[in-house]
Image 1 (cartoon, rainbow, N blue to C red):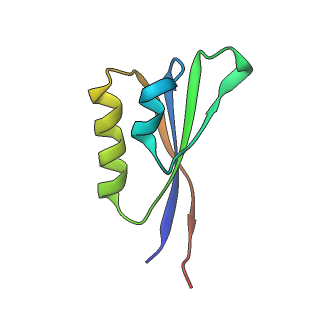
Image 2 (image 1 turned 90 degrees about the vertical axis):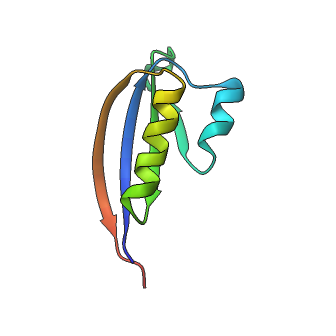
Length: 75
């Protein structure tokens, strides 16, 4: 099954206990000022993406964008 790499941008800085909610995701902060968190997710199916988006909404974070970066083939 192929993995799709997604980039999810949210308003604000996701840190502290909330960061633990996103285990397995790569988090980085744009411009170093903490005004935007960029999450990178590798998902084999849409359900994983949907789960992460649900977590974001449950934390009342503002989603700026969701985009597909690339698709990777598994051997």
